[in-house]
Structure formats: structure tokens, C-alpha cells
Length: 169
Image 1: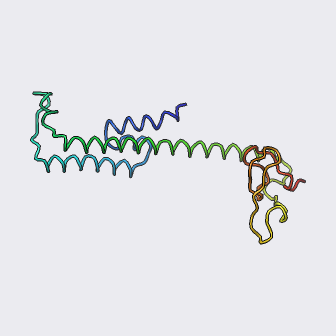
Image 2: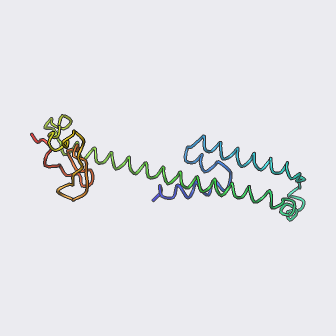
């Protein structure tokens, strides 16, 4: 559950300070790029429209009146795009971690299934099951779960059951 909230947290942090959401995802280059784009764009727009500095402590209402919409709108749009990018990158990071954890769990399960018989890594599928007439790999379905798998494998990557053509000692 905690990892599912990470993209949302990154998006909120990106709205608070440009680049902060990407920093929380450890995407240093993207964080710097978004920070420089938004801050640099803001400075350029303020200079282009010749906006006079206003003391926000003296009159808070004067701040919103002093920033023209031609300046505020692009900065707000860039900030929203930065937050969206941080969210999407965060979702990608979570998906990659889940994929890696699943692959590691499958690898451990296969190692446990092979046990101590010494035949774990040296298995090779028979050539007839692996290649077609021209030597290309053939996709087949798992007899246990019925999902499509690669015939080069010795176990189904969906249900982790050993395949019948895998050598057994």
C-alpha cells in the first residue's frame, strides 16, 4: 500500500516546489530539468512582462493583482505538467519494483523446485519442442494454465509449473 502512495506523494511535492517530486523518486536529472524550466521560465516571463516586485507582507492582495495572467498561467501549467510527470514516473517506478519482486520470487521458487538434484541450471529443452521447421522459437500454451508461453522455458512463467518437455532426472 505504501508504494502505491509514492506517485501521489511525488505529484504533491512537485506542486509544492518544482523538481521536489522527482527528487523523492531519485530522478536527479529530471528534477533539475523541471526545476530550471519552471523557475527559469518564471523569471523570463516576469522580465518579459516587466512585472514590478511587490512586498507580500505589506499587502497580500497586491500580489495576486501584480502578477498578470499572461505570467501566472504558463507557470501554473508548467507546474501541473511537472506534477503529472512526477506521478507517471512514480507509477513506472512502482511497476518496475513489482516486476522485479515477482521475477525474484519466481526465480527462488524455481530454485526450490529444482532442489539439490543438481539438474537445475543444466536443463535444455528438446530441439523438437523449441524450434519450428526453420529453427525459430515456437510459442506454445501451458498444459496447466493454458496461457501462452515460450517453448524455450522449462517452467510456465504464469503458473510456475514445470513443463512436460523439460528434462527430468
